[in-house]
Length: 594
Image 1 (cartoon, one colour):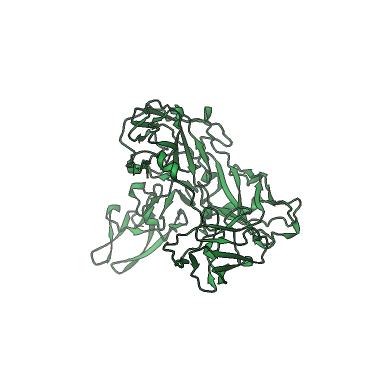
Image 2 (cartoon, helix red, strand yellow):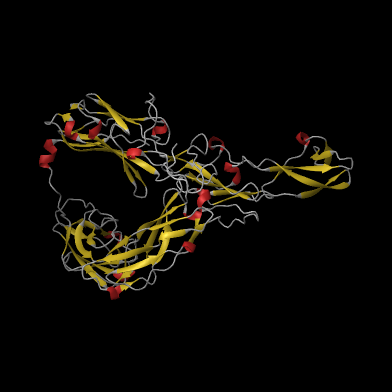
């Protein structure tokens, strides 16, 4: 969804919202009189003394300032008061860690049992703040007529190592050969001045697969090893064996003829690359939990690789004039340009802006960024009060899945009335779609066939996304003529002469047609028979199954499915259409071009 907000203060007035980016424009008069607000409610008496370093007991002494007093019952759980400098929780725990007891002379003692902390929200050391909140924790006293607003006060610090992971896992497979790693070990390093290695405990540490683009955790069976127990110079290692990870069929029993999912069959990002996020958690130092850290595993399955001269891929068309993006969601994986518009406020002049004054950055939910190239990936047409960005960039790969596009404008060539405005930043973030939702088909024409869907939410049952498989019953009489089983309006069996007249039965149970996790499974069966009674005689019929080659429904025929952030439904499921395992590409073929 596009978000267009332009805010400014003009003297004591607020400039009306305009279509465009979020522009931080502050009036001079307001800026000159604004002062930092100090904490006038309470203070910490021992912030310099409180430093959480182990699982001991720590006490924060707070004192209400003149005109205020704490209104908190003894032994109140105030774990939610513990915050960082931004007012966000500093620990993962909501309750059970910190309790308050009233003291004398408007003081309040907060006792922290650090052994109850299950996690910090930062990686490494930081400052500890207190922000009383809840049901009016401070009230007025004496002649004070104010009202308390939640306010921060520094109350101490905590000292724990940062967790750093050096390296990545690299491997590959042809699909016919087992997975093998060329780099199978990463280094876990703890950074802290004066680190005491005897206080590191990794006995309960674990390595897990984390969410990422282009895969679901349920795609794989992951059985990792433990971290190495020995630490030297604050470092230890983790080694991943090729047998520790395999493609999963979610417990589905495959046909004896094979099929199902595999590295080469799935295709990774569509060009043979898998990028998976792995996390290390559960390490403690002096009993305190350390942050989870992540690293990447890259597997290449020898598919088709696209390379791009100059690092930028431009849609091979002249811009087509169109309305704004449908549903206010620019789609960067189609062949059409998207138009992003800025309407500038009164007394701005944008006529001198060029494409070089704009910075466009796409970001994924997992930390990937791509900065677009001016006058290649996008162009700009601008007048005094209107700027239009024509976005030509087209993303081909299935990963990363970019979910947002941030537009930053340099004010260097932008003019405005300096007596009214001071421009501090010009930025706006759009929600975008960058990858078509798709499925990958794997398995042969004789065994179990699978369709693994990506970028789709809500897939829970077969009929949502697939044609119902069917069968009819046939019988060859003594003269060699084929007869078909049918039923009259009362359900009585009869023989008919054509398939069009035959009764049609649901074949889902016979073919084990089902949805597990993000995949549909279907197993072809042969030589199946069924007995039916016709006019008092029991016949043994052959089951004749319907065509199973085109079971997936097109996206617009599916029910109850929605696209995940960054994805969009196309007119079919193969808008990208790159299957690295197809025979016409060839084993190990690289540097393919469209």
